[in-house]
Amino acid sequence: MKVLSLFDGISCGMVALEKAGINVKEYVAYEIDKYAIKISEGNYPYIRHMGDVFEGDFAKYEGFDILIGGSPCTYWSIAKSDGKRETTSSGIGWELFSQYTRALKESKCKYFLYENNYSMDSNIKSEITKSLGVEPIMINSNLVSAQNRKRYYWTNINVTSQPENKGIILRDVLENGYGVIVKNQGKWHSPEVQKAGTLLARDYKGFGNQNMIGKIVDNQLKRLSPIEYERLQTLKDNYTNFVSNSQRLKAVGNGWTVDVIVHILKSIS
Image (cartoon, rainbow, N blue to C red; front, side):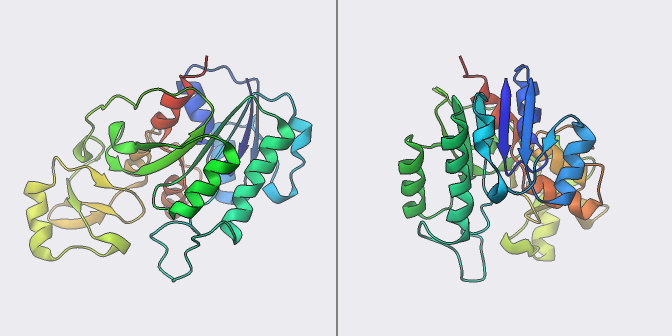
């Protein structure tokens, strides 16, 4: 299979293709984050990195089998806190998405898979649906990992079911300590709730990523480690161990939950 990946990040798509048992003949990636590219190259030195999607000539990939990608959700997410969340099909968020539709039109890939945030405005959701010609599938990563992470997936792959619930909980991914739920925007709960967390949070699933969950070790509240972040995204341990820890956390948080993508790709006939 020949794969064209936009907004490739740390190449979670490649990981998913491997786990789905799909032979990849060629994988071309468009990504501009130098840290994400370094992680991708560390794991897959044969991936061809092509840079900025806005500069891509996607017609040269005509004959490729599948286009995958999820444009940055920063502009559409309800978590955007500066009051500039985009709610219509305009602005930089839509311009980024439009590079995906341009790539699909120019490359004429047989299959496509596009992912983005569940919290986007309904207007944007409707416009994406109109542009791609298929209704999205909502899948929560909590079926295959220890995090609640709802995402929309638009694809012409005939996916007829949700992933099987693996029953993974937060303690299953921790290197040590007990899980504790924290507030949004990275604000920790009060000490009383932290203490209760040692008893009550063992069987809870984590909330998303990037400062949304933590753990208690020796009665101290700690952020999750890069390895624990990787496990939340169903990546192998130390997949991102090519950059600093802070960049590892950012890169994993921006990536896909691999086993959700595996579920979708396995439906390719």
